[in-house]
Length: 333
Image 1 (cartoon, rainbow, N blue to C red):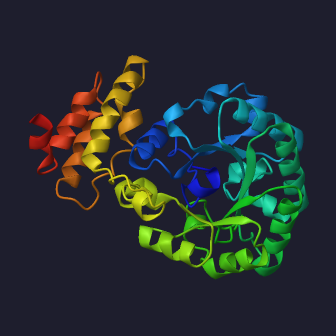
Image 2: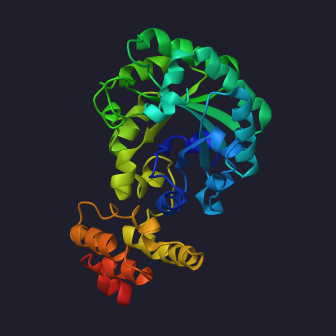
Image 3: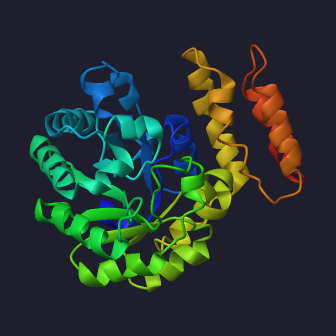
């Protein structure tokens, strides 16, 4: 599937959450959805020697690398490193509102400098063959989104950016925490829809406050090219991803069941442990898989308590799965 098609549904880049273990887990539920890394700074890759941050499993594809930075030359080098590592897309973060990001002059603060963003994107495009995309807000602080957002989109489109993800909230760089910036500023999905009318040649995905596959379909039916889901895809991944291929991508493959996904995680977990990893590095991403189902609380408790114990192995996952009614017997049959 072409990446434009995969971008019909994507899982948002989320710091401390969408690491390579999370992405492998999500990929077992959907073969089609586009996955993103956590944000990786260009400085860490180019000056910090943090090439290990690019590690990923071939099974994760299609997968995009999200970069943070504001130095065009450095971002070009980082984008090239990402392409050489095999990522399908290189994304520039213009939406993160954290203090650390602001102090580095990247993230949401870049909404104030559309021409600098355009210069960065041009350098990233010139440096490597993968598609360069942008994730942004509708504005920051006292900016008028009706004025700044089209100016921003025009600037990046002029240098060759074809796909943009718009988080349909402002970011307040002073006075709100990063957590509050995910909830407090009001959503303006209609503005994002209008940007699609104004920029018909741009592939535009909407992000922010979307929690069900029904909502995803509604945005696609309204003319948007894609939908990015964040926290809902992490906390209740089964509700978003298990039926996504059939409902969003029209796949005729039977949707997977949650217990199938758990069993498919066992060989991956064994490889991770054999390489010196810890069980909870994998299982922390699996806690919400059975959300809303009988046994979900026991599943979470067994994983949370058992995975941190010294020497914990796949048997903890098997014990947690056995706590789901009707699943334990099938697993032992």
